[in-house]
Length: 452
Figure 1 (cartoon, rainbow, N blue to C red):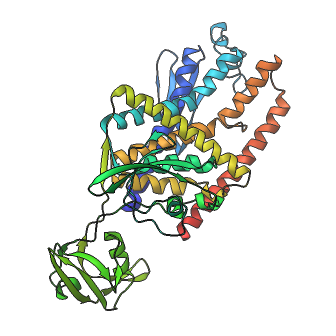
Figure 2: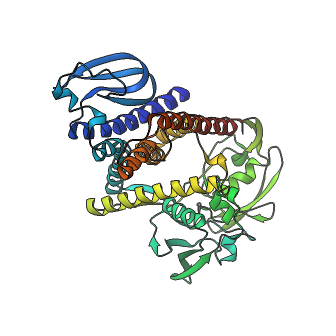
Figure 3: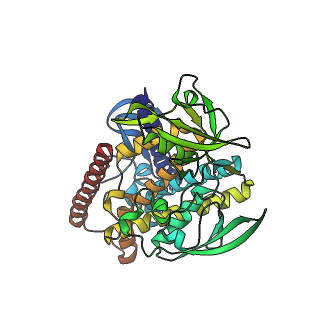
């Protein structure tokens, strides 16, 4: 069922992105007076079709669900010698170069508009996310060197306010890619009050490969968790048998301080079958017991378990904006994401960032399934980010992509004549080779992620 759920979530997201992209081409082609012969969702053999509209455009669903296309009246693909003059005027290659560029650019533009609409809707509705509250900061990390110790709430990065952990991560990554220190506005609790400081977080020790995965953790920044307080206990479980009770607050295990609930869980999991001395407080009374976690097989390894609930959910915040503020914020988010994507690509080409960051359909499908299981807000956020990536990738100046066609037409606009057909064919073959190479790298990375 999990696999089916993942596949369905991926196909739904893909269908939305493809339909929106191709509708961009379709509507602008119609607006420019070009005759559209077919609108297909999917590639390959057509399995269903109907004709609608004054031009009797064929709306089709094709066998292969990866992609889609808009087929226009085009002299390069059809014999137009017997067509009436009214149709010849609507042939694609006979349009001014400006109109052709608008039609080609409309697909990626539609993806950006989709992302803006989705983000604006989510910002208006309100997006719950973890607060930008820090867990205890390990020594010998950039965050510790900057003066952060844990418990601080970060309210801004380089003068820009942050509402939660996701935005904090995003802005720090932007600063890291720019190789510029991040100025963090932090609120510290002291003597029953609060004090605001500004600290400088440097990235000198951050290697290019550190930008992969949990790069905030490598800086020493982690999400604050609730204290280690026990919830419900199984009556026959190790915790209850040892004398622990609901509401007990755990302070130390084997003499070592317990930072929070997550640290407690990790410590228990790492000690299957080993007796542990646990110290804590029950109300205002100290407790001191010994617990032996039972051994449990999980994902190919043996872990410890005491069968007691421990709250791990971080403090959450919900930021809501007016429609106007949400729209401005959505436009900025879409722009920043596009710029960051291009920066990452540039750093990959320069060898400053690993090509392991290139993801393929397997990883994207996995993320689709994961976000769909979390909830509709996470799923829509995923769709918005993938829509931006699709828009950016399609604008790259690679032949066979929209960006490659825009490059051709830009040269035509500058020189006053179309690119020679032979050069165009050679460029198309080169473009296919580049795309196949990128796809091979992406699929290889996907398989390596699955294996690890």
